[in-house]
Amino acid sequence: MKKILFCLVLFLSFCVTPQIHASQAKENDVIANLQKTYAKIKTFKAEFKQELFHRESETTQHRNGAILFEQPININWETEKPHAEKLIINKKEIWDYLPEEEIAYRYHPNMLESSHIALSVITGQNKISDNFEIENLDDAEAKSKGFKAFLLYPLEPTPQIVEAQLWIDPKTNLIKKATIIDFYGNSNSITFTEFKINPNIKKQSFIFEPPQGIDIEDHYNQENE
Image (cartoon, rainbow, N blue to C red):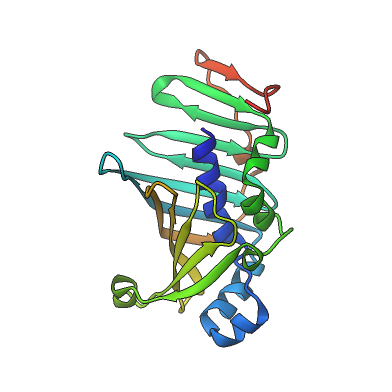
């Protein structure tokens, strides 16, 4: 669960407040416009396609899903069958629900501290440019779709991320695709198929009520597990 959570929060860090040093922004209007657009985002609702590649087994898993987000850290992440999963994050708790297995895991929100760099970006406490080097990427596929591509290298790499790639639509100033690559060569790629800025989202969307009859593994008081 921790790996899934890290990838989600890290991915959202690119989607919420992609801030860049002023000197870099002047050199690239795409990044500057992106920064202005995402600075105004308080909530978003998005549908996505996810591709998870496992290097050792040379296998790829495809998922479809949707995300609801509200500042500073309310998240509702849900993927459809055959890999159905719901992840609910709020300031009080974290729930990871696997409906096909009829089980839900509950965690303390302090678990997010393991993703402190990404989380600090989401909550506005830090800037991506403080943690990543950003380079233009000559990507033929992105170019054919009219997107601009960028590479992000963490200044302090971890096993969870050694490189990230972003595709940006200069017409809307929105991220269309984000790919995270870990130390082992595995990749987690999210492509937005729909993205709505600042929709009204019900508070109930960020509260998980366990269905009757499912098993619950409560790790709330085991923060260091």
